[in-house]
Amino acid sequence: MLSAKGMAPKNGNRFSHGLRIAVRFAAIAALAAALGGCFRPLYAERPPGGGPGVRELLSGVEFLPLNVPNGTREARVGQEIRNALLFSLYGAATGSPPTHQLTMKIRVSRLSVLVDARTTRPDIDNYGIDADYVLKDIVTGKSVVTGSAAARVSYDIPGQEQRFARQRAFRDAEDRAAKVIAENVNERLASFFASGI
Picture 1 (tube, one colour):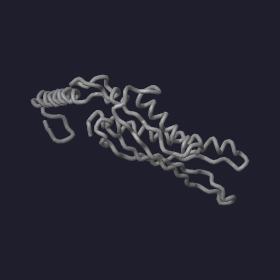
Picture 2 (picture 1 turned 90 degrees about the vertical axis):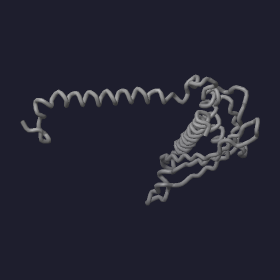
Picture 3 (picture 1 turned 180 degrees about the vertical axis):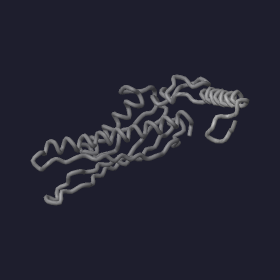
Picture 4 (picture 1 turned 180 degrees about the horizontal axis):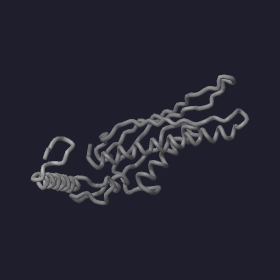
């Protein structure tokens, strides 16, 4: 009756070995149940202590129009960011009466990643948006959140004879990058309203 590693325990210890395992599982289950009450969904309707939920607080954010020249590609990208952010904040075109104001500045960049050695034409481009944003409390006028977000997306460039496909790929890259910026800003604002930090 050996109890060496890899062998079954002695007959007298089988019951106590099984009991130890059962006690461990019970302790883990109790710990998991206790910790389960510590977490709540970010977008829960009401926090445990009452008061407005994160979704309701986000609907009070007024997103000011971006200061970009009209008729430019940056103006279109800025409007894409604005639309995506308004939809994620409000779920509609307008929110509740504003309690905070969000201002944003964007910079766009374009970089050729892969160039055809024979024709020296780019095959893959990288499109990027860098955004700096500030959330201010309307009542106090103080900045409560400052941050930045960045998005980089790549897109294929078809041959020279496919001009429409090239422009469409570029526009899709702009739209994808705009959505990434909107999601990043929305997550940061939601975490601020959930934790106050």
